[in-house]
Image 1 (tube, helix red, strand yellow):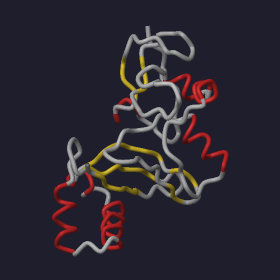
Image 2: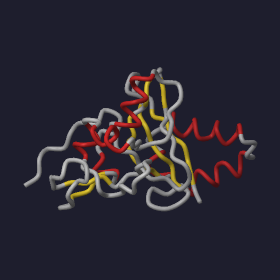
Image 3: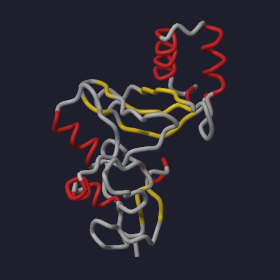
Image 4: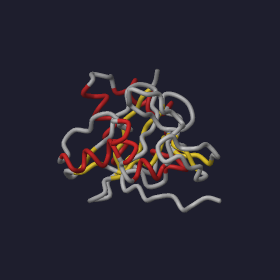
Length: 176
């Protein structure tokens, strides 16, 4: 029997993003099979991939017991929020090094991977991607071709976030 998943303010639907899946795997932290297991990255000395339950991530026991983090360093947020995002929130897998976006002095909520079709409904995220590529000296035609090629399930892809304060959508893109 499975319990209701814990609430992750910075990753509101980890099942839909694939960061948490149904599984009978026994968690190496609590020793229980609760019906779900985290599939996201785990930065720790021990290999803990697909061996931690969402409850041990949410309550911080996995981070504390294994000195684990579930996402790379987040910039521009107070230390107490940084610890929640890196140590009590399931991370997500990216093609290159993942990064957690911030806005309004807080970490943004990760919504999942998106392609060009999904970004069409998030004009502020699309504008941010255009700006990021322009800052990297991409010509406008190449930028538009790249943005049009973004794929939700392939590469290049974009990672969509929503500001927890103002509701703005943010994104960054990635490929191998």
